[in-house]
Length: 152
Image (cartoon, rainbow, N blue to C red):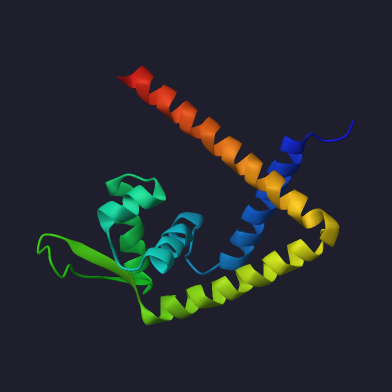
C-alpha cells in the first residue's frame, strides 16, 4: 500500500526537524529560539509582548527564550524609545550575521528542493502546497477556537 499524503508530509516535517537539530547541535539554539530569531529578523526590534504573540507562546515562555538568547549573545534588551515602561528586544550584530547566513542557506535549500521537481510540475506543486497549508491552517484555527469555547 502506498503511503498516504499525510504520511509523506509527516516524514518531510521530521526530516526538516532532524536537519535543523543537526545544524544547531552544540550552538545552544533550539527550534523555539531560532523561531524567535526569525521573527526578530523579519519584524525588527520588538517588545516581548509582541514577540509572544508572534511566536504563539506565553509571556512567561518568551521571557525564558529572550533570557537564553541574551545570555548566548544573540539578542539584547534596549529601552523603548517612546514607552518608558517597555523594553525592546533586538538582534546583536553577530546574530544578524548568523541570520543572514541562515537565510542564504534557506534560499539554497529551497533552490535544491525546487530543482528536484520537473519544471512543468512546479506551478502545480506550489498550488497544491498552498492549498494544503491554507486548509491545515483553517483546521488548526478551528480546533483552537473549539478548544477555547470549551474552556469558557
